[in-house]
Image (cartoon, rainbow, N blue to C red):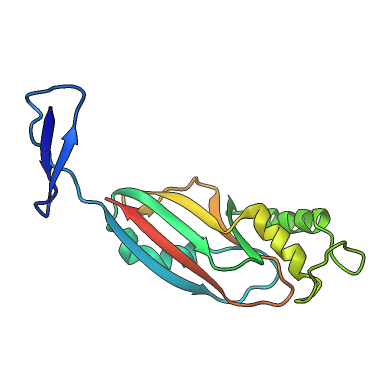
Length: 173
């Protein structure tokens, strides 16, 4: 059985069904939508920084138009990272930075070959790979659907602050 459905803009969509239901011959489906925005975050000192409010402020006009969907964040850099973690106690960010510095050696005794951009560059690349450069967050009723104590962090792994660019793509209905 084939069912014809029409999206709000009258585009026919054919769906093949393994089950037959004569009552379900026509159904309305919300058309998916997309939005994308590139934002620049101001330079931050080395460490983990809560950036949730900055992200939400930048995408709020687009975000409120989504009932259900996903927000994808992509950081354009290899010496910083994004992660989701504690949004309340600043000590968690400090402790995370302490942990990263303890497990990734730096300085003249570090074993890294890539030092052309400075002694903090290769450790920054390793730390960036540990946390990653992307996040995927559910959207529910026009809001990022994160836990009560969750926040978006920018982790700056270099000694010298530089602005960072994030591409945010929203997809859903």
